[in-house]
Length: 170
Image (tube, rainbow, N blue to C red; front, side, top):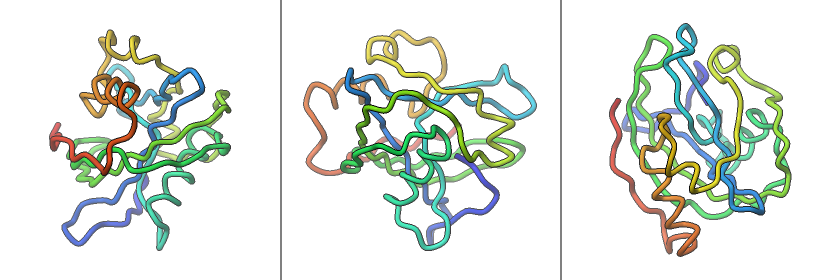
């Protein structure tokens, strides 16, 4: 998710790899996050985070997934979507270039194994969601069109190449 050290692209954006993790029932795993000092200011999001050192986005996706969920038995697929976003969190603004990788797993038990100090203060847990549950959700979910994107993915399969999502500025 978020750490104070970050690999930043030449354009000043933090490079992020996220995982659209599906189980055998096509449920998606989302993490429940909130502002560190205000648990009522909450949202759901896909596992993932910033690149560290010289690692590739694929390596970052798998590392972040393992750290945030304990899930290591995954088949990492193609990049589905790319998104630029900017949001306030923990007293600062985060500007990110996010790549969303498709992954599948049969391992559905989750346990955060290596959260940063900031993540320990701001991640409340994880939940598997069906596409229907996501479409009916009243909670805030990022990216904001995730239910629609997931429905298209399940109906049509992965896109031929990464789809660029609308920039989101919160």
